[in-house]
Image 1 (cartoon, rainbow, N blue to C red):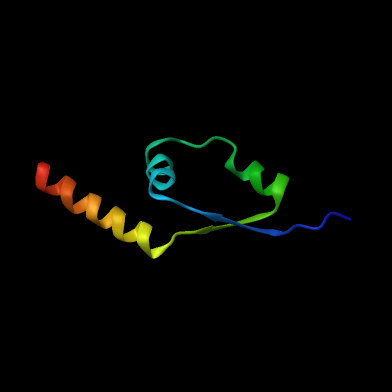
Image 2: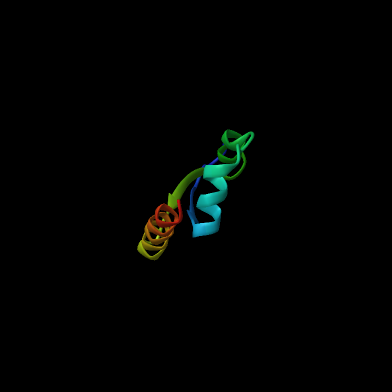
Length: 60
């Protein structure tokens, strides 16, 4: 009997920007290998992404 476990992945800014800009192949296979994935995004990362977004709008 295989027991699946919950794996928390703490996302930083670089990781989220990479996910948004690149296509990730076979991401569904990850859950098969290691268990259910829950992505955790700290408030600090959300604020940093908001700041980057505002700064990029000013440059355009």
